[in-house]
Image (cartoon, rainbow, N blue to C red; front, top):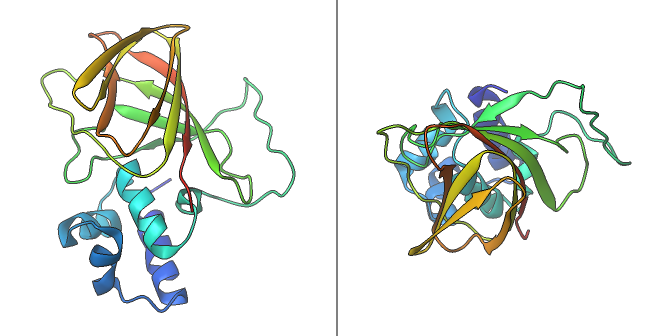
Length: 190
């Protein structure tokens, strides 16, 4: 999914709700630079930024990722190809080492966002921590990850899991130079 689609959805929602784009920074708690990046960047904005924009507009975060809506269950079989969405960080491309594969983008009215996330090593690049309302559950499928949560760090290997409040500064990265894969479920209140 191209970023211009997300930017267009934000603009359309602002227009539909009679919210001037100039008010979006104050309503969302983001800076003008962050809003501009969300509207115009080639990458999808950070998940934290999208969640804050969604709250400001009174919509689910999935609204920006949906292609179409299904009222019944949405089923993905392991042999089906999913389209990756690579999020940027709030002000840079520092967290572009995470490729998100949405598992329920076609489910209408969902409260959770389940993803398979491929995590590439960051190398020398310094990732940026995220914070937003809600909760996250992560289950490590392959490899090992380091979860920065507040002032703590948690090392998780395949088969390990963590559940945390997303309002606390957090970051997920590969433990070393080996890629990892996780199942992540993100819940954000409306």
